[in-house]
Length: 469
Image (spheres, helix red, strand yellow):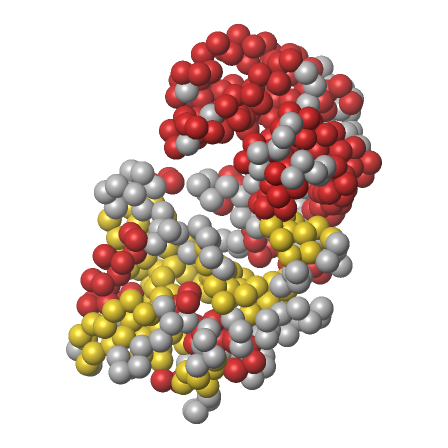
């Protein structure tokens, strides 16, 4: 395992590198800063060099000297009113090398106190991939570990790298996820897959390892774990769940068989999570409904198209509050996925997998990992079917969506029963309220960002009041 050191950023890269990053970072798709943002380098994670003469393989098959470049993970604190919570910490993996031979992910060459240095985005550089794998305890020849490695295109909040040469039980290789936004405490995309893998469940990509460092608390006294990268087993021949659904919808082909299988998978996921992870306190019905009311009020204020639904929203939530308040037994809560939709699934070799347990990245980690009702995950998946039908331009989108919804719920209910004390009718009302909650959020988002897609969630809001989910 490669040794590492965590130092103050002042002991890290030369200030000229930081000046370069100040102009480069805002151009990255994963960069969360918008508007006026103040950036302050915080910590620099450095690594011991590998064996002398060790080489690794670049994306185009070129040979790279692994020990001729330094890998630095620079943690930078960003502050700004537009950022979630007003502040976030981003990870900037860098590879610093001889400018005579710049490599993959090259940004620019800067003059430092010790000479010119070529600066690379570590997320695109095999020496960084190798260093992270070794720091996780993943062994193997350097050329094998990075052979045929490639960065996934279209990534938003993180950088994912396919590494077919990483050893895994199934022989498929590894998927390296470099977290670009990091937070204090155990990362949910480590905690959940690791627990499920150790429990022997194959509904998630097998957890292979993670890179964890320790930082200090606000006073610098108490060690705080922070995860920077994750390795999981590659799912062979996999296709993104949303892309598969859109493709079938575009050809007018049914998604019901897949939806039924997905429903069973999500039921198994919830059952396993309830068993291997800490459960939460009983549902606070008043606080639960109050949260729904608050979000609904903000949505109506932000989206004029919702004005006509104010009375219907209030009536549904009144009925939910009355129903939950009349329950004879407390309703348990548990860890859930937190941001479940088709894009968080993969279909490969005839089986579905669930991935990306981060939750909604705009919310604090403590809020994302808070125990909740599993029906929230169900609502997220159902809303995804609506988007697949529309984006895929199904010949009859309403029928395609309704059939997929019915099939998913059939599959889910075959593996789960309503929580103790909750009747089927109450569970149905809870699900309707959570589907509405998700659709209202989507209405606001589409209003501000993609107004041409606004009819998709508006149609869902209408359906909540006209027919069962």
